[in-house]
Length: 75
Image (tube, rainbow, N blue to C red):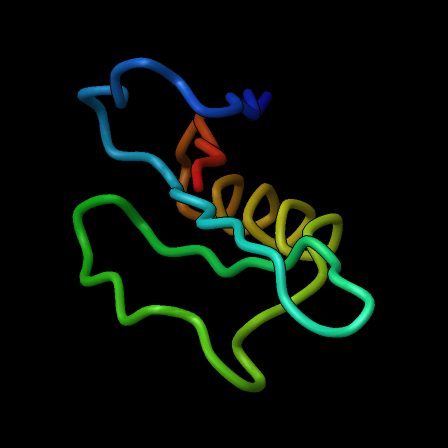
């Protein structure tokens, strides 16, 4: 099972997936991108930004595939 944690006060010490969220577009919508915590955060732009529900779904799938148990959603 993969836990999705929203804006924690401290990040987990174990390897996890990080989802970065921001508002974009007109009308404004929540968008984001994800990466593995111990890999480089290249930032999201253009085709790498997805709707928030889609990015959380993909991040959860990636966590399962990599054997990780946490997805951390943060601004």
